[in-house]
Amino acid sequence: MDPFILARMQFALNITFHILFPTITIALGWVVLFMLWRWRRTGEAAWLAAYQFWTKVFALSFALGVVSGVTMSFQFGTNWPGFMERAGNIAGPLLGYEVLTAFFLEAGFLGIMLFGRERVSPRLHFIATATVAFGTTLSAFWILSLNSWMQTPAGYEMRDGVLHAVDWWAVIFNPSFPYRLAHKLLASGLTVAFLLSGLSAWQMLKGVERSETRRVMRLGLTLGAVLIPLQILAGDLHGLNTLKHQPAKIAAMEGIWHTERGAPLLLFALPDEQAKENRLAIGIPRLASLVLKHDAEGEIRGLDEFEGAHPPVKPLFFGFRVMVGMGVLMLGFAWGGWWLFRRSGWRGLPRAWLWGLSLMSFSGWIATVAGWYVTEIGRQPFIVHGLLRTQEVAAHNPGSMIAASVAGYATVYLALLIAYVAAIKRMAEKRPAAAPAHLGPDDPQPGGASQGVGITVISRTFA
Image 1 (cartoon, rainbow, N blue to C red):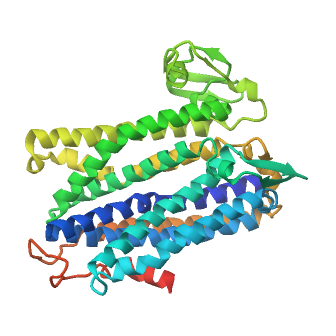
Image 2 (cartoon, rainbow, N blue to C red):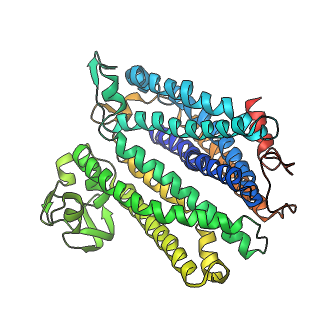
Image 3 (cartoon, helix red, strand yellow):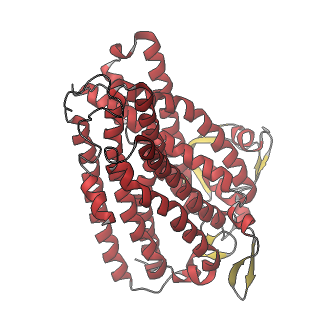
C-alpha cells in the first residue's frame, strides 16, 4: 500500500483509540465531583459508594488516555515532520499550554483525589477532585483550539512557507472553536450519561444491584434527557458554521454533487465518486436546504465547485449518518426511560428496555468516533485547511515499516480495549460489602477509593 495512506491509517488508529478515554474523563470528572458533593451534603452512603466505583472507572480511563496520548504525539515526528516544520510556531505553543496548565493540574491533584480521601481534610479532598475535573475540561479547551484552528485557521501570516501567529486571540478563538468545543463537551456528557445508565441497567439485569444503582441510573438518564436536545442545537449551529467556512465538507456529508437549490436531505444513498451521483437515494425533498440555509429553496454548493480540493465522500456521508442515528437512539432511550419511570417507577422497568439500555452503554463512543471521522476526514486533502496539504508534510518512510507498526498498534489497542471493557464489567458485577445507610465525612469509612481495578495502573503511570 501507499506509505502515505498507511501513515494516515496509523494516525487514525491512534487517535481513534485515544479519543475514547478523554471522551469519558472530561465529563466523568464532573460527575464524580457531583457524587462527592451529594455524599457530603446528605451523608447517604449510597452516594459514597457511587463515588468510589466511578472514581475507579475515571482512574482507569485516565491511565489509558495518558498512555495513548503520548504514543500519538510521537507520530508528529515520525510520520508528519513537515507539520511541525510548517505550522509548529502555532501548534507547538497550543500543545505546550495544554501540558503546562491542564495536564499539570490533573496530574498534580489526581493522587489526592484517588488516595487522599482518608488522609487529607474533606475540604481539601473536594478541592482536589474539583481541580482534576476542571483540568480535564481545560485540556479539551486547548486541544480543540488547535484542532479548530487547523479547520478554520485565523490570526496567522505565512512567511517563506512557514506559518506564524500574529494574533493569538484570533488563533485560539478561531471561527469554529466555540461550536466544536460545545459539541465535544456535550458529546462527553452524553457518553458518560449512557455509561452510567447502561451499567446500572446491567447490574439490575444480573441481579447485582447495589444501593446506588438506581440513583446512578436516574442521574444518567437525567443527563441524557437534558443534554441530547442541547447537542442537537449545538450540532445545528456547528453545521451552519461549517457551511460558511468548509462548504466542501458539508457537500460531502450531504452527498450534494452539483450546486442546487432546494437540496434534499438524503436518509440513505450509495455515493458513487466515479459517476458523481448517488445510487439508491432515499431523501426528503428540500430538507437539506431548510436545515442548512433555514430556507427550503436555499442554494447549497456542490462538490463540482471544489474539484481536486474536496474530501472523500463515502466516509463523511456514512459517518455523519451513523453519528446522527446514534443521537436519535440516545434521544429515544433517555426520554423513553423517563416516560417509563413516570408510568411505573424504577421497580417496573421492563427487562427488554434494560437490555437495550445496557447495550447502549458505549453508544457515546460510536457517535464520537463517527463524528470525529467526519471532522478529520472532512478537512482533507488539507492538514491545515486551505493552507497546507497533508501530502506536503508527510515523511518518506518505507511502507513495510509503517505497515508493521500499524499491525502492532492494532493488536495492542484491541487487547487493551477488551481488557478495559472486561475490567469495568467485572467491577460492575462485583457485590460490594454492606455499608451503613448514612456515612458522614468524619465517620470510619470502609473501602477507600484507592481499592479496586485500575488504581495500580494509574499509580504506576505516575511513578
